[in-house]
Amino acid sequence: MTFLGNLHKSEMLVLSTGRWENQVYMSKRTVFFVSDHSGVTAETLGHSLITQFDASEFQKTTVPFVSTLDKAIQAVALINATANSDGYPPIVFSTLVQDDIRDVVRGSNALFLDFFDSFLGPLERELGMTSTHAMGVAHGMQDTQKYDRRIDATNFALVHDDGANPEGYEQADIILIGVSRSGKTPTCLYVALQYGVYAANLPLTEENLEGRRTPPEIAQHRSKMYGLTIEPKRLEAIRAERRHGSRYASPNQVSYEVRQAEALFERLGIPFVDTTNCSIEELASRILNETGVKRTGLA
Amino acid sequence: MTFLGNLHKSEMLVLSTGRWENQVYMSKRTVFFVSDHSGVTAETLGHSLITQFDASEFQKTTVPFVSTLDKAIQAVALINATANSDGYPPIVFSTLVQDDIRDVVRGSNALFLDFFDSFLGPLERELGMTSTHAMGVAHGMQDTQKYDRRIDATNFALVHDDGANPEGYEQADIILIGVSRSGKTPTCLYVALQYGVYAANLPLTEENLEGRRTPPEIAQHRSKMYGLTIEPKRLEAIRAERRHGSRYASPNQVSYEVRQAEALFERLGIPFVDTTNCSIEELASRILNETGVKRTGLA
Image 1 (cartoon, helix red, strand yellow):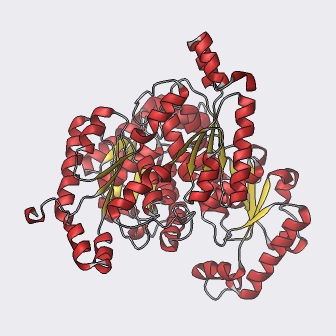
Image 2 (cartoon, one colour; image 1 turned 120 degrees about the horizontal axis):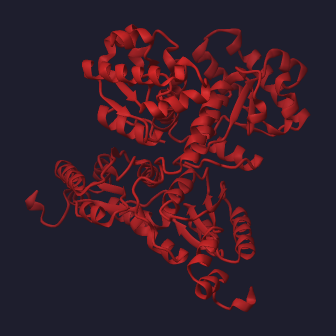
Image 3 (cartoon, each protein chain N blue to C red; image 1 turned 120 degrees about the vertical axis):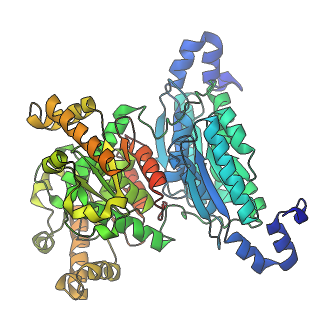
């Protein structure tokens, strides 16, 4: 590597052979998420940023619990070894709240982007306070009440999944309804784990669909109901994975169910969303904002 | 507000009456998470930052799907109205990838901190590419394969929760074992939803505990096993919430179970972690890092 002088090997490639080589080079970039705690914030930040670059494959490694100077030195050794074997510097997204630990990792041979470094200063000035520099607060157990709410909400979602429980809907913040495999379960689990929201879900049975009525056990909770629908083609594909060739997955049955479900939502004025092209994050955000349900346990 | 000139009302309070007023002032600060998409990134990053400030209660509002100039103008109106009614500027954490939309929201009466703004520049220079400025990539459906893996992993976790299924463990990335209520289920769901990791869990039955053996259906998957343990006092409290006064929640039973479970882990060389003071994010991070299981579907 010494023959490269101050240039990174990658820059040599790019300079000498142009775009195609640049792509090859890009396809190998290593990304580290370095954190003094679980690494969830560093991952979220880094992921959002690197997905802004097309045509790139990043090798991602989370290095959590870098909470001492010794561990910081180990992290630097790992990053520098990777820089050597890759032939160019990795990208480090870090969430290190303690200055001395951060300074050590900043010394690695990498593009170093620390999130607290960039934002705590302006926040301290605006709030007129100094920050605590306490490690692991964001995703730790400091706020037991909020944390317990997330776990209790998760248990609630499990107990009230797919209409499994005829009772307890008065505790629900929202009740999702929709045909089988329209995305109810993962959405309920997500809002529980991420936001501490109590979410139940019930399938629309043949009887419900035929009569365009909601399940009777939740009839008095109309204001909590939110419907999920889905494009018939997509639903066919999802159901066929489970039961290929069945009536359940047949085009006729699927389009009948979707049509009836949407008619039911419209007849009763139940808000609903098409899940076909929506991730659970998008569904959760849309449903919570439209219903005004608070993100009580925001992780 | 005009009588305040260039000073924020809050600064007046702080300047005139000192620390106690500062706390009162702090206790009312409004925080907005503004995003052109689901808002998950803005929430996660903003949450990490504000939890660095003690003694602060923030009123948090997520404003997602700000994807047009019209919606940006609406967001500004909301932020400015809040600034007026609060008497001081809110804090805005934003993840707005499009420059024109971001510039509009930046014009609001608030401390405006945008994550893309701060980090995309250095990244573009390091990677030698321009970013796409595409909205909703981080938590959308662009990478269908990764997204589907997260949903499939969630279904796997549900089907293989609490030893519900005698088969399919060859598909598991990890198998959590532990006594009842040691934290297995939420941890499995979290690694599935967040990382697309296939995680099963089984309880340790009285028979398993007495013989210090793992459940027979997973005997050939020793290398995938990871144990959860918990302090007896905490477990007593958790179990008592469910079945107060039962043998299940009694000090003797709980401490016997925990002792036997730990002896089992040690006898068989199964790594384990104490969940008592660990959040699911921390547990997930620790387990994935120690086992080397890849965060395949990183959300």
